[in-house]
Image (cartoon, rainbow, N blue to C red; front, top):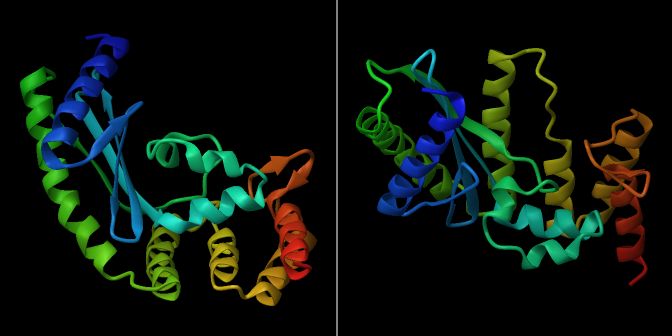
Length: 215
């Protein structure tokens, strides 16, 4: 089976399984809002190797709201829920779990059965993680836990929690602490992975904080 044919089949199965299990699916991303969190599951297939690879990540639902205000894209709040999973400019998510499995056959029935198994594995974890987040600070602690796991597994991974820490400060109206983070990251030459009108995320955050202090 060609990769394009496999992708089409996988998307068909994902939509069916997502609907059956209470998730939603768009452009290959499966997603769900669970309490205060937004979860995304990404499953990809390699037909030549007969392998499915998967990962589940999360972010606080409110992160996108304040992120879009900072980067001057408030109109994104009107986008459908799927935009938080597959939109170009969204707050970062943290990986919770990932894996891969090799199938005996690469056909619709076998792939469908395995995707069902993946959902059965990940769904309880999403509920458990969501139940552990009751405040913005508890969300930060859960993020730090999974960040530590990520760094232990991939010590050279280019990933930080500075954006999440800054967004948390903004959501808690801790403007002075948010300003310290923004200034520090600007001094370190960190763009935050986002530019708008030649301004980095942290420069935009600094401007947003200054404006907020003057209102």
